[in-house]
Amino acid sequence: MTAYPALRLSVGYAAFYGWEPSALKSLIEGLPPALKAQLNYQAALYNATGRWARDLAERRYSYTTGDWTRDMVSAIESYISEAWLAGMAENGLTFEDMTPEWQAVLDGLIASEKDFLPDLAAWISTTVEMTKPLDAAWPAIHARLDMWANRWLDVFGQARSATAETDAKEEWVLGDADHCWVCRSLSGLVAYVWEWDEAGFRPQNPPNALLSMTRGNERGCGGYHCACERRPTNKRRAKNVLSRLLDLAVSGQV
Image (cartoon, rainbow, N blue to C red; front, side):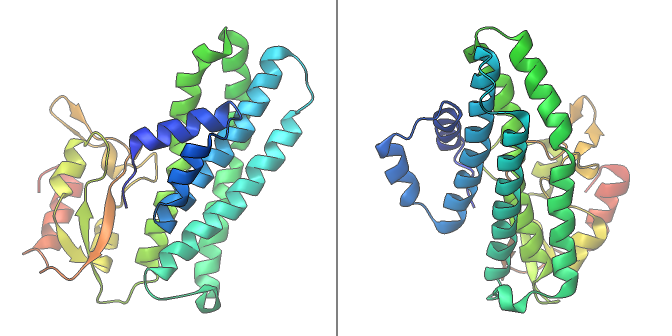
């Protein structure tokens, strides 16, 4: 799955200011379903935050913190669930195949996102108050919300891996982002899902300890703005891949 950074920036900017340009909407409608869902999640987060930020900046108080929280919770519950089901669909599964164990994982992911909302609300309020005009606050808010939107891809990947067959293999594939040294080291490696899980490497999921490792003066991305995937593949498993992954996790060498 591709992140399409320029398109994500355009969608975020339009949603933040409450615009619905027809050309942009038509472009989104023509995208693959998974990418379309990810962009729609981003737009929902930006739309709620943009509306609240404009209200705070203009001191109108017609769209309250409670309204923003309600809309953010609604978006999280809807789109994070959709991301999990999209990951299951990659393995030919539907909601009817959901097990109690998988549902518990999904419920935990949703609860974790909602737990961070008070901190995000406090940060947005402070940022809007301290930054004039509102346009000047856009880059910082965009960067913060983009990490939230990227959670869709994270949950999608988790579900795809969690619901795969035990003998399924995945390849680490770089996405459309600046690549840290850890992700570059993993790029192209093919391993069984259980090997990836045992070594502990997965994309996104910030703060991601294994993607935060340092080598010399270079620090890993920590999962922030990470667009990599563990993509299903039929390619040959890399030689001694589990040992190599464990070596990287322990010593920073692969």
